[in-house]
Length: 75
Figure (cartoon, rainbow, N blue to C red):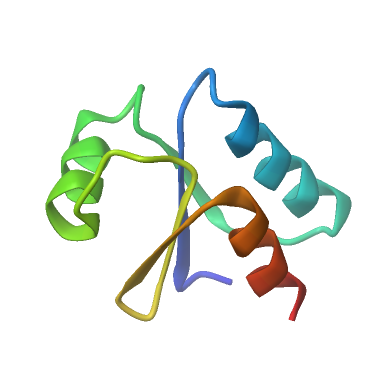
C-alpha cells in the first residue's frame, strides 16, 4: 500500500489503535511521526488543513479519526 501515508504522533492513543490494527492485519503503510519529522508536520498542516493525528493520506484526500481510518482499511 505504497500510495498510502499514515501521519501519527508520539503520544497519541488513537494513533496506537490504528497502528495496532495495521500490525494485526499485516497491512504495510508508510507511517510518519509528525513529532519526529517537522517537514511531515508542515505537510499535514498545509495540505490536510490541520495538525490532527492520526491522519491517513490516500488519493489526494486526508482522512482523520481512527475509527474511520480502520473502517476504510477493512474494505
